[in-house]
Length: 130
Image (cartoon, rainbow, N blue to C red; front, side, top):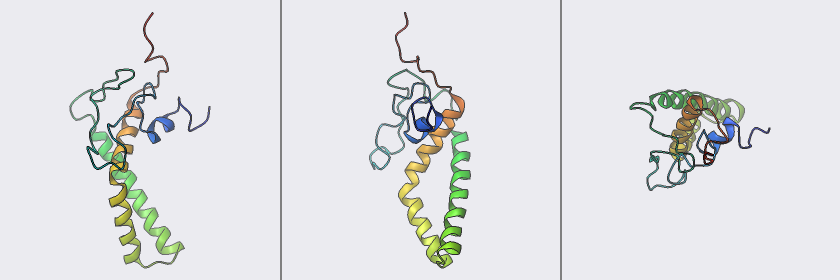
């Protein structure tokens, strides 16, 4: 089974799909849409997984986002400053631009990771019961 094929956590996370069925979308709009960028449906349209199992469920995603953004920022600035020999100011300026452009995507990826940590893939979840 490949890393980017259905049935893998990486597939579900990067494609922002339901972690249980890998069919339903986690968000109502595309990642670069300015209309409802943070809105999630209450449940999966394919298998019915509740995306809001309890109040405060996504606090864990906040920590994932913080850690991911911190390490990304360090690596980004170090690469541009040490490898490409840019000034610190230019490196941070470009970092701010990149983070501003990809803020919604980082937010969504953190939520997808958190859901994938807590929900197991079930390929038969969307099938009708016999």
